[in-house]
Image 1 (spheres, one colour):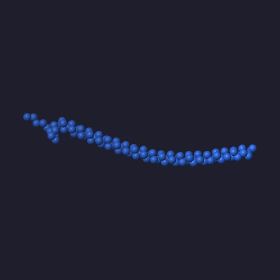
Image 2: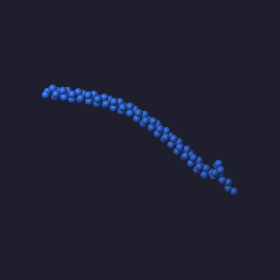
Image 3: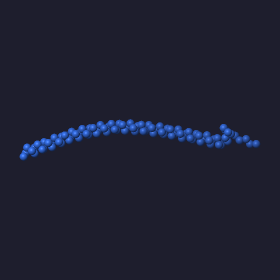
Length: 90
């Protein structure tokens, strides 16, 4: 009689194949977890950059708005001077 070698009740080639399959599944799971962690770090960095850029943009818009208001007031003052000059000229 031939006695077959078994490991955990499975023939040896089948047990090796099953354990290889488990190792591959665990390896894939670890790599996915690492990739997900890297993506989470990247997302956090992008969110932080977004907040910084929003603050910079807000500051720039406020500066531009103030400059536009100043320029508009100056233009209106000059238009008023021209109107006064034209009224007095007649």
